[in-house]
Length: 399
Image (cartoon, rainbow, N blue to C red; front, side):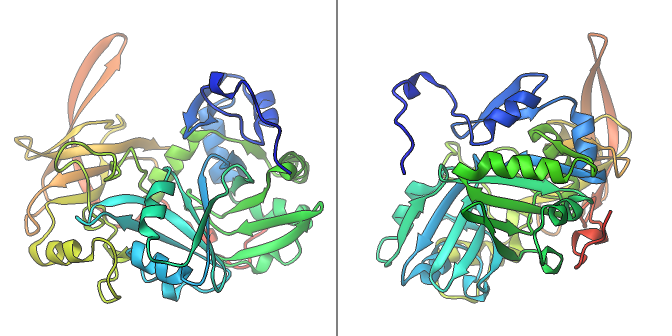
């Protein structure tokens, strides 16, 4: 059944998600932003409390604004293999994969997760709107592409007690779900899909349900989690967690190639540290020739994770060699409460064989209306800043 047509929709800058009635009740700061046409909360009460729910108890975030595209048809697998850089023939049914896709110049348009439900049945979830690009890429393939964003409500349930909360909801067998796996449960005349995925590098799940059952899911989840520290969170808290996890974000750490105007403002997978997602041995895919040339010649930019001295976050700071020559710029930065580190992502313009052994961040910060400048020593980090064993434990611990 179609929802009643809203004659005043053109007056609304952002649409409410199916969970909005519960979110509005919790919002104490009334701090919202527009996420691709939908209202999304920056925070509800306190960013620090919400962040520690991710790391210590159970956080719940509304993922409904994420774009969700159902791809079905005889050529669904071939279509994804032609568009994505990763070999999607290896993705088994009931599993979730992560990949990126590029333009013909080998520059990243977006990244996303691909859910494989059946032989010819997939769902692609993206941060940016991608319907037009999907339709262009599907030329010649026997596939149907449907935007399911309005029909499917989603919650991210992350943190050490998330498994216990889902168990309290009566989701039998959830203890057997492995990372990047999918399970389906009957739910009030519909279906609840649970995937062991997330954007926090912690134990966590994502819950997917028909929009008509969204509030029922919310109420049952919070009832089950009332003794496990369940708390709604906004995007500010999630941003801290995803930087600790080493996850990049479109619009923050790279500009989608179909949005850039100036030359060299886009990036390839190799320049974003995502070379492991590029399978140059599989048949032709969009951007393959350009990526082969780049791999042979070497990339112009390097994406790095930095541990920075001190406790002044290096937001939008420049990175220098020996405090003399500008090498690049910080794209994301935060003081990590859990790691007790000043951490950042940066994109550097350096030759492939150039050593990165004397890097400094030029950081400006304000105290009592006065701007101060400090030079802070940087060191490269190869691994994520936060990667606890409970993230992969199967069955998870009952915290």
